[in-house]
Length: 171
Length: 395
Image 1 (tube, each protein chain N blue to C red):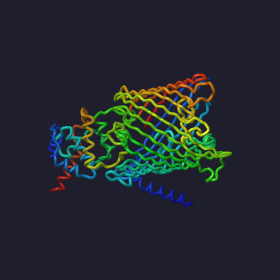
Image 2 (tube, rainbow over the protein chains, first blue to last red):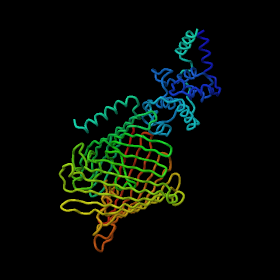
Image 3 (tube, one colour):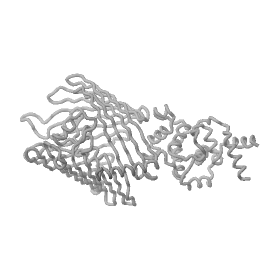
Image 4 (cartoon, chains in turn blue, yellow):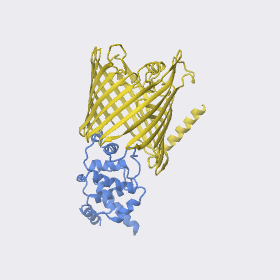
């Protein structure tokens, strides 16, 4: 059963079908506070993947740029999404970003480039509307940006455990 | 603790209680400049600065915020060879927007804030106080009230009287500045004459040295009235004309009137998306029976190596900015300095010419390099040159 679920998850994650579910998008737009799953869904669907938010998070986590302490419920902030975009879309940055690869300098880079307005709170939790606007703005500003190849093409076993736990709970 | 102290303590507690709910954005800026001065002797000089800045929003929409910037200065002067060091709190600004409707917006900045008059020649410095900015359907109204006595005298720029210069000539890390109460009110009427904006401004300063019981050699109270007209003369060509009338009284052994004026005309031509050319002429009143020297609140030298201020000055300047590629910026200007009238019988009013050039490279987004060169050719003295290299690194 585990193998079947892993294979299913893996297969879904590599399906390069461009589509964004209107219902998922509406749900994100209505949120006052978004999280890593919402961000992942927008990123994955912008990259042409047809997947559920959970699968999108697993795909984004495969890049190994989410901090180890982060969970699916970790809030989406300007700093956290800047780090993901700078690290995985291979954007050039300043000396401090190149030396540290730190989320703080990722945010500063995008702020410098005008992506974030002056005075934006780097740790504020983005609303659904702001998150959708930010992701769209990114692909407008960087139309040629392509994500690098994920470090971990296979899904992390912890997602399987989460799936199984969810399945047990619904029994 | 007196009432003022209690209010400050309450404000500080309220402020720091609010901080944890919002994030703090911060940064460090390191700026180092080294240069060579070719005058009577060849001397080297440095100017090193380290700044720490913090900003934090005080609400979700970031309409209310707090910004703080402190700076440590260290420099070696070319002429004296002395090393000087001092600390300064450059900014501690609480910004509020209490009223924001369609067609009506009132914003308030309080604390240590930067302020300048519409020309930048009367006042252009930090000040402790509050400034309100109102935007209405008919135009914009700004009002400022502030005090300069808590600023660091070594940085303030508020140098009007002999006492101010004495205060500034100290080795202390932090020395209290000139005790002046400053007020300013600005009215801007957009596109009131064709496409030209009209700005009317009243600025005043009151010397509080006698009221606060300080010793003094001079007391100076001044007021300035400014009218300015600016707008497009042709596509890509903008004209600004301003006139400042100064009145006041200087009290020393007796009272002297301080009536003066400054007239300014400036033309900016945006020759292309990457090029700007400008020319500017400034004329200030010459000392005679009725007029005295123009005496602004903030002292600013009229040139780089020409260190005199704007009093008794006729200055003509032409310059340009060129941005050939995103990472390079070139600026060049030439300034001629003259007296506004003949000072010595039979001699010309010409004082000297300064040529200034700078090249800024954006090496990376957080590292800028700037090369500067300046040459001053005075009328009756030897020429003087300076060349410097500056690096600014944002951490």
